[in-house]
Image (cartoon, rainbow, N blue to C red; front, side, top):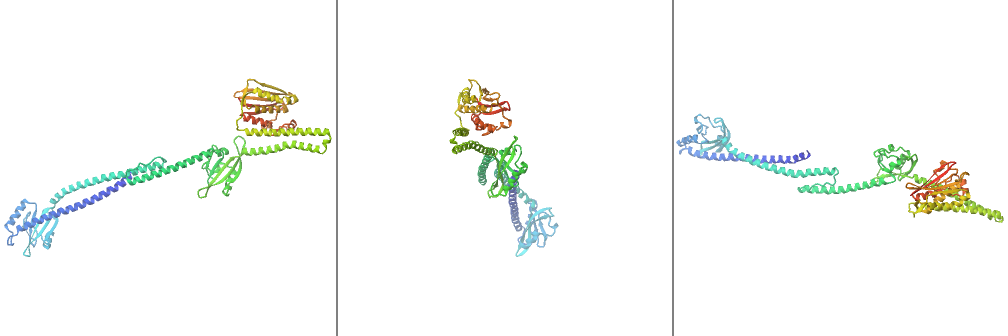
Length: 592
């Protein structure tokens, strides 16, 4: 419809202009032709009038001659022209169509009046006597300076019209041919111009719809070709810019999607512009459509809303911490940082919130603080003992051999305990350094590792009256770092010997077997067991169920933490189950 309208607007103007121009020319030619034909007829009538005047006048000029009467009679029968002889007073004395006596005075006829006044007169009017339109030409016939008569010649206007009709038909055919040819050429020219314009419009619509790889065909019209080439160059640049923007947007989306930090962008009206997946997870909003929603409707946290308000009145970033439920029955600690979003002109257009999960960090800070406190506490006791008894020796106890020996033995025990603590700390540090590194693992018979560990603790077991019972198939092998697994078993056996005896069954059972893809090693004692509230913290550094008894037994509080680290280095686990009053079972599982 648009193309048709545009075409007809363009072509219609051409048609109207052509019709107007051709019509004007045809009208002008037609009028000129009619005038020319009329002038030709008037010249012919004048010639005939002069010839008739020469024949009608007698030699003496006083009467109409017999030759004139014969002339009127002959013209009346053989010629279509009408000749009339009129005296100056208007009386008709001769006519080729009607008897002169019957005719009225012609003194008022326009051509006669004009001929008498000017010598020659013409007119075209309707003749009531003949009943048709006639073209008249009248000539004054003078003689010796006086008016003799007026000769008038007339021809029917229809005779002239017959001749002009033929010319009109020829002219009409010529005008029709010219107009048709002009219209055909104009139609072709209009189509030649409008078709590229229509193609240009369709192409621009396709580009506007997002078909950025489409290019307009180059038309044959030079000016339109220049325009199309300019549009195609613009489309190329536009496609490059949009591709760059899409790549930038994809990169930004990819970065935001893979960030561990949560990111939320809001506008000045506190409407959420964007929120990445990490923010949804941290805030527990996985199934909430946040974009386009007020932040207060998404998350009703006074701390968060206060942070946003404060950031809008602050020149720099503002931070807060927020505690939210983690969906597993616990809490998650979030650090929130609000920063102004500014446009290219430096005007604030929103706020950017960055959320960080600091739960582990806060936990590690607590662990670090506890560790420092525990290390200080653990080291203070032996150091204080060594210092106190050393001062006692310096104060004179050396003079008493019995006291001196006892004090030196105490100093020795505390020094050994201090050495054990430091050794275990160093061992834990080495294990921490190995985290993420590959171990020197070899295929080793598990029975050898278990037997070596038992042998290292056999003396202590004998001193405590504890029996060590081992169950391990000789064919069972594991790919492990034998030294580390041996150390883990020594710690478990040592722990069972020291704390697993309750005056009843003095027996520690070490059992090793393969269970599917893993190798299970259990160390079972029949001691007093462990209360449930202590189970979850047994593998923490310096954690003791009974601190007083642990120090009496010479424990450092680091043995089970070392066992846990060794198991994790091998991709395994260590667990504990206990029933108060019946004993405890530690289970070490390693990949087979």
